[in-house]
Length: 282
Image (cartoon, rainbow, N blue to C red; front, side, top):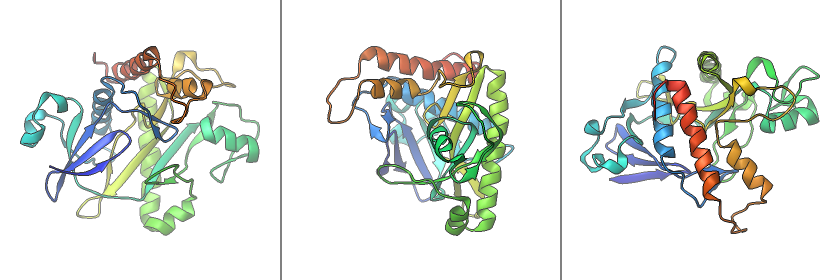
């Protein structure tokens, strides 16, 4: 089977001219670097969370999923190693942007705001504190870099890239999906601070959501019962791992091994997020 892409986490195979197989590995990346340690079962958690959300938002936008069931896969993928971590999907013409929506001010957005009072060129109210909820979610798109860091771009640049009508549709859908899912997650004790979506066009040029949706890899999930404005938050995503890497001055060159307990804690956070959101045991 022809492999057409090997990303930081996902492997993509071409089934035929209309379909792809997405396989979610147990690799983990941080600061745009694939780390040397595997996180057992992480791929399954991500795949199952995405499948849940794709179904939850299908009234807002169609998605690319055909099936997550092993029996529906091509014969080459009907083996235990692919079960639970794969989906067969429609091939889309993916848009060249990552659609980031921020409901709270944190991370790089907080750094920008402290310096300029803006996030990605969007003026925000004065006097916001770290991790504070924004008056309204904001759309802060980036480029898709094949390697290295994605670059922030303005909404005007998105219009230039994909056309004004499509840019407006993407922006509106991004915020609508975020609002619906953030409200649901809050009812399960999770604050979705921000997230990233990817969209494509089908054969009829209809907008379709693809890639992954609201996973701990693409989002910041905070425990609602421990949320406190004015500081960084505990999280159910890979922020714990990022914090460990920063505290230990980790780099590809440093050669410092990542302790097993850090890996175990990371996957436990992913599993807890899955169980809270879906109401199912992993």
